[in-house]
Amino acid sequence: MKKLTSHCIGVDDGEVVLFSDFQDEGDMWTGTGPRERRRHVAFSEPYLSPPTVHCTLSMWDMDNGTNLRGDIQAENVTCEGFDAVFKTWGDSRIARARARWMAIGALRAADDWEV
Image (cartoon, rainbow, N blue to C red; front, top):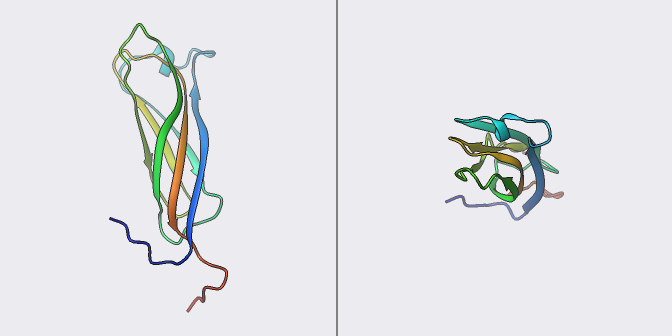
């Protein structure tokens, strides 16, 4: 469990388009086997330490003639941002995906002293 000791807690959130492979015949749509897409997300201001980040799919468009497989995670979380990572595998055909994210962590307050 992460315990936040700062009296200034920040919640940042947003959405990011991970890919749109249908129009240009990208590998998420035409490929098979393990595939991955990642997009870097920058926070609106830096946290004091790496925050807790939650990622979820807010939209995905997939072929219904194949198995539906997907995994989304926040990786490489730093005080300044993280990578939103979507993975699929096997015969899954994913045309496009969008992720919604939220970060919660301690921020520096305007009246904090640096010693």
